[in-house]
Length: 457
Image (tube, rainbow, N blue to C red; front, side, top):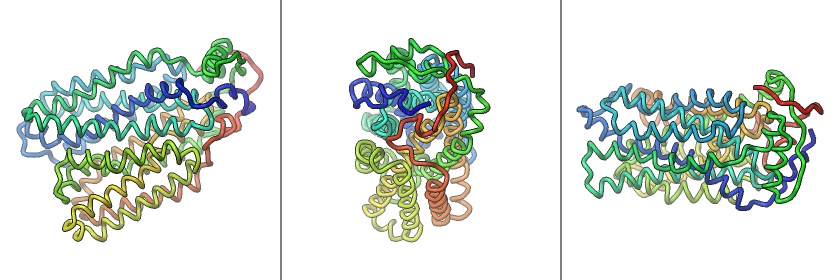
């Protein structure tokens, strides 16, 4: 397979189609950012509503991790379903998200809420498979990182920002605690159901139509629509799934490992930052999260997506981000007592930590590696494995951090997480190739036989 078979879409300028695709696919990640962040903001209200002074460590861990375990499950399910068509199941993911978000408002107890968070996670996992794959297969070569960075790395903090704003608005309006947490969690359904129509009107990707469905006419039509001129499509890929997967398995599992490491580091702060670190610097959870997103995370995500990821490259951005994160975690460990006496300094260092971790967030956290390092023939399954790796890492953070924090203290916990970040930097340089601004078929050096016939998953 030559790298030029999809040149009609690879060499396009970033235009209206790509902006629509970025927004349509990115709103699912917005929902994930909203849903995970909103839980951390309302945990104390949920406990009070259920007649408890607080949650046990096991209950907190289960509530925090339920959506993450559900996401790993949903990713694996839709990874295999996606082999039957990307667009075919697109929209079902946000439908699950929307229904589960509304259902949370009616949870009668903590066990029910855990179960509903698991269901919501299935929708998140499905979206984390389908959206990056669709985006990668539609994107142009030079701006593929921009598409994924804006659609995933940036939409996540916007979702987290929205969660903080909704929680703050509820507090300012003096909504009763019993209703407040239910409305905050249920509001996650609004963007999920709002984008359903636009997802159902997205075209199937030309790469899927040509390589897996054997529909060269359909693929040529999609390519011509994007390119604005007539074009032809390449032939189908009839290689056995197992043969192709085995060839690319090392890079697929490396991408999964790196996403796991990223989530092990970053979810400590996503899940527990508003309730642990905010208290040490004298801020409420909602205000702390809101300021962090506006001042640090969102600007770093936007600037990194627009000007860095495609020009500097995936590997340097991720590796140096991990290094910066490790250094700043070390600062927290060494200066925690001084920081307690200087809230502005503590908030600034925490913000710099979030900026540093934006680097790996725009790469592993945006799902770029799994989608780029696997060929079309196995791409959704490869992406499912990488998503599952990330969600497992996040779930481990949800369960392990409270235990770690209790067992070895705040300083010890910071040093452990810093060590994990250093490991992420080293493995980034060792395990994966650079993929920035390279055509997908050139990344995998894919070769397909000259046969025109449909492929089966």
